[in-house]
Image (cartoon, rainbow, N blue to C red; front, side):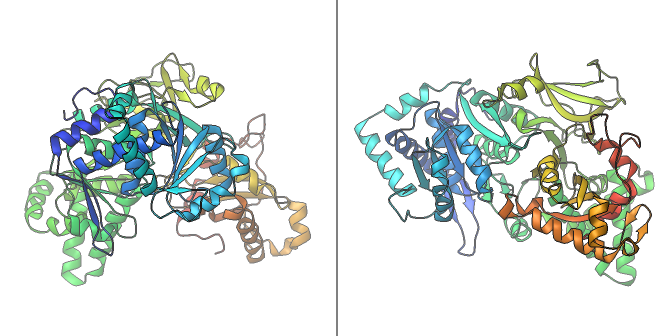
Length: 607
């Protein structure tokens, strides 16, 4: 285990600086060649910025907004807050203004880091709604007015404060304990407003230890970061790398294919969609070939899938050993060819991707977690990497699969997953009602459905809660989008879909009388329970594009990319609604499975 006993993140950073010194921790690749930050340089900069926060009036227990994407300054700001016992409230720069206003107001943020002047200007427009927000600090650019300051100015304040208070910043760090709040991460909930997951230093430090006991990260390892730093999944992995003395290379989704080949990482942690892209690229390469070469590569790939699925016979396994020395290394070039640790999390890994990548030699460990659990709950083991599962729980973590009455279920029986362990959140920030709904006697209701295998591994089968997790790992709250869509006079009912998909889709039930006023019924083209007329498609496409936009408070990923218009309403009588008229989402998914498959099979909604 890399992480020695520490009480807080200031101790973690100091230990890393002492152990790894001038080794490079952070590297960013860009068109200019990138830059690098050593463990010691990071430690020293964090101390100065932490002192700058103190000089600016931030104290232990305060919340600090952190609105930025992956960059060195993000982790500097994050660890600076942690150093003095302030809790950051992180979010991406694409956050809609109304949501950003809610996060900072509900979080009670007195100070906010933002990445650019553009974000600072957006935030300045919200100042009337944020009377407690005193200071905005720009991380990546110089400040352009007196209402804000920039990181250089904050660092200079810190340098002056350190000179005036020798030993003061380290004394403040010693006052921070495991039970102090490290971060409040707002995640989608069952209401219009997100919930603030409250995680302590102890929560995250314990989760680091858990991960390190399952997978050994080493000094000299290289990892590529693609996910947003504020995402709990990426965040815990970055902390593990810091603890282990490994190098973290910031990339992004536009550059990641090139960076995989150039950096040749030994560690790659990604969402299922990224693994799908790698898989699809390998398959596309095979299909581009012709004649005997194409047939050979397709046979190699099919045999590798059988090996990955553990269904290959003696001949398949024997010939696979030959392919592993000759052909498969070419496939592995898509990942850089040096992967020692590969992790998928943040969503459901498609079975065909799982078996294929395992078969060709990617050491892919599928995991499971939630923001509420810091986040890692379960992770496959390198020595027992069973496909189609998320592995057993990580150390010191209890999981139970329960029936509707709360009783534990045996292997093979699907139920609700409950979780208990030192990584479980303290609760939702300023939301006792929601906290009581999910935390019972120290057990967290995950909202996910799953079952045990006979060997004690967990398998996720679905979601009992409504939150959609897209293939890229982004959380989407469907109810909020549905409420907006139903403001249209043409829409009577709507169900937003998209679990583990690239984009969102929707099943719409029209307000038939209103629709008839717009489009004659003779042009509706009823087929297979769906209105497929071109005029109907055009009409609803325009409505969706009008209602779900950034201007109305939605992110681009919340756009409805594809839809179908149902010819019959949903009701309690046909089993699609409860007696209180709530949509039974799992029944809709089962009843309309073929239509939903059609919906996401490259459809755009206007085909």
